[in-house]
Length: 116
Length: 113
Image (tube, rainbow over the protein chains, first blue to last red):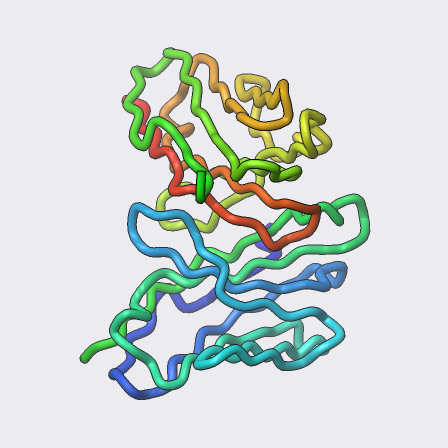
């Protein structure tokens, strides 16, 4: 049972344009969402997060949008740069139900390629 | 150290062999996690330590998997009688507090042949 899904295995974008990565979840207990970026042979690095009490969080070129009713979140990167090329993982956690220590459920990842 | 350190970076094991994977978390970090990442998938939770206490081991796939953190710092993930399906990258992460914002190591890639 995949509780966090990233339905697009890959995305290709031109440098300078917007990249939009999508994520859907099924568990209504999830109340904190994160995006991680991963380069080959490295561990995931934290990018940006959002709490369920918000619908938008912005950090420089990165913005995460949360639609709780649709159980959907997205990551916008504007403008996209070649150095953004990596695998992006969506992850979710629940602050109640015994996993408040921070257990994360990850999606399968989306490979982003930004062409110069 | 500055980050989470994992060793070895790569491990090839013959089927049936026992392996031990080491994680050195960031000094002073209370929380420590192990995740397993199969090829083409996202990381999957294995187990969680708060200091030396293993508070959640619900993600360990079988009783062949065992993790410990005896002094609340270095952790070891042991896999007995390795099988081909154990081939994956094993990621360790640590955090100063409880909660989801933690730092991952680069992982150990285990290949069982």
